[in-house]
Image (cartoon, rainbow, N blue to C red):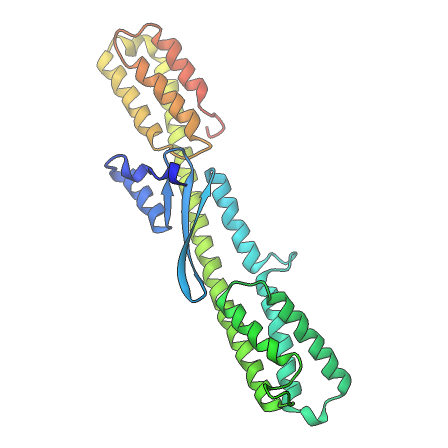
Length: 283
């Protein structure tokens, strides 16, 4: 990541719609790297310490898919077992255990064995978790599995309290993942908006190219107007700053800069080449 620390926001003094777009991305903790990638920061709490995790997405499409993956992992889509579903299953297991413990003397021994197995499975599911809420629940499950207290005695009241604590910690984690999923959705919308803005700029640039090529003989004889049109295209393309569009836009800008000078030979051919470099699927 050290090779990519230079960001678009630090290169120029942006204004107008470009500044607004950058501000929108920064509000989503996202930086535009000079190589066209995105550097996305996300805060998380590990071992009761707030840490910032940074991730690089290679292009805008991968960034959008990445947020989809986060949302699906937390909330699911009805077809895959999400974290929300696993938390609910563990909560139900703890609710059943608490109910069993509050009516301990009247419980069928087979039900006790079944609940103990469920508690063991729930604990194993949480064993590798780094999340503080899940680790707190795992600690409660560790003591609950045998329904015995620190002295090795069966203590339904104390164990029911542990079950309640586990349920509460899982509820905290549920709130946490809904918040994280909502934030990922916000970032996804931000990335979609940025992608559409780049596509609009490409579309506007393509139509200006067509106008210039169609009216080339007239425009080249009015050189001030000719240069003005090139500058407007360059302005549109300079904020097409993310992959996969950046490569084509940068190549076209390089050709446009060459075609801008009065003494350049073959201006029309260069303009046509620059036009051909841009994707045409947004027209």
